[in-house]
Image 1 (cartoon, rainbow, N blue to C red):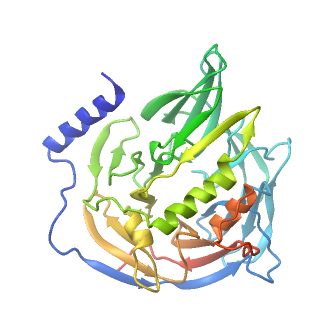
Image 2 (cartoon, rainbow, N blue to C red; image 1 turned 45 degrees about the horizontal axis):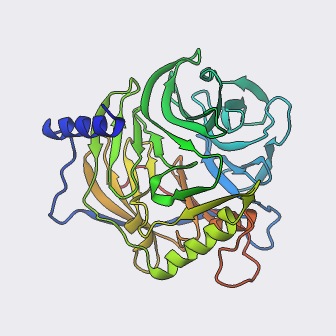
Length: 399
């Protein structure tokens, strides 16, 4: 049975068993929260200067770790926002980085550093001292392993893997999988997987086909369940046990959000300038932008067991002064309420991270990304504003 057909059958069985969340047509509880700023760094005139911030996490002591992909460095900041040093940087030595793509706090309280190429997870203490590597699976014969993200549970490593192998005609096949790995590096469960052929010649890609680095949005919640969104237009979250069992689906009937013509044209220009206009050995890569926003923009597990879901409408259709509106599911997967958080910002331009009761707003994220790729996100040719990080208090338990 083809993978997509098998997924539809599995989902149908879950719906028939009454395990999928129904959407209520009644008015839903809503809460508004004014965010309280704790500190900010990287703004104009500040000594901290960033290239492209690609990840932000906090530890249980309130320290913050900012991963700068362009500078290939991880900066540590105190609970009050004071700079404590660079704890990982580019290099070939123990704990040093070459092609990192993310970070996370390990179950022992250390810092896991995900290397995309070659796929690996390095571990350093929160002071930057090398600890070693976490075990990785062996690649299939004739293929190479890349990593696109990782999280650690009490006894497993959840890893977003990519494997690439040749097809004998200069084309290559890419396999993507989200898997659970034990302490020996053996794969114990596969949550989702697919593959596609990348041609050696000219290529045409579609934004809504989810082929690329961040095609799946996923997390591990406080109960060690793996939650995945892997579709563009649907509000659909798959909830798995660590053994790979599909436990339930979470969803609400939000409908697709059509992009404005202005933003659609801006995205086309961005991809043309920053991604595709490049020729590689005479090959032309083109990219077709979707006319709808991706329905799920982010999923954020909270320490109280709840899951905060950011949709395209919750990110882009807010009243003045509202940064984002989240759908909140409780620890049992039941929708409980929506929460609007009030703070300056625009999620078309900025990006948010949530960790340890704090919300981090990375301002001017898209402008920095575009500049690093040789493009321009702004409507004019002026110099982009510097990236900055603004830290807000975001309680895990709301009254």
